[in-house]
Image (cartoon, rainbow, N blue to C red; front, side, top):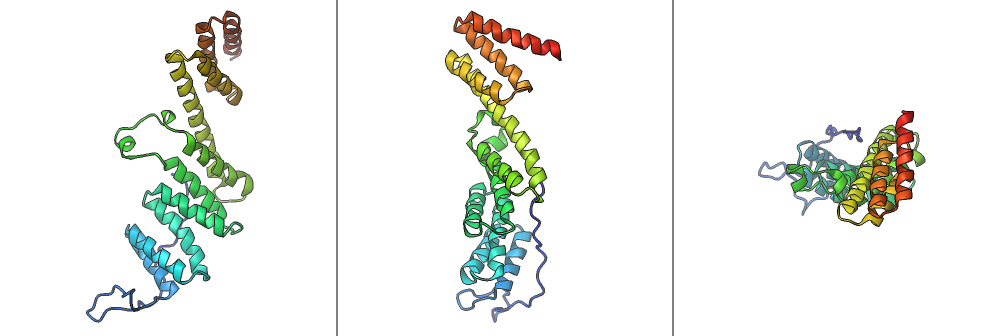
Length: 249
């Protein structure tokens, strides 16, 4: 997987406070307001142990009690990361949206867009598809389109970002996946006798994926659709273009 923001989960050198008299080191939140640094330290430790619910609770408490401290900004970023580690893409998107809304000019806003893109890549990978892998091209492509848009934003608006190069690679792969989806839909229409719809999908693919293998496949679908529609002249024209392309390679 791509490079993500690496937060330091190394505990800060801060003495723990609020230990219960019975020796339990867990603080009593109902009676004591912990310092921001300690809440952050506890969130780090919990996340490093995979206790994501606890980590998120500490980060949320930190933000609500100390909204104007630097720790609060870092807690917003960490919330995005912890939700990602917890495999909660909807929560990643919500926390990234919140950071972008509250900090539109922050130097780390590129990270929020990048992680929102990753969350959309992962969204829709439900339990069934994890156990029984399915062709991604046959699923709803909207999350992929949203992911593509955010990766593109990172590349175009934050070209010096440490995530820009990886975002370019992700865009290339997503474009291929979106093209495979369009091909799958065109074939679906063709197999079910919706020849006009199949032809329209194929023509869109030809325009969007020129000089690729997807263009050739789309032209084959288009030729067959024209044939079924008894549009012989158009069919022959498409096949002639296909043949010229094959001869030139």
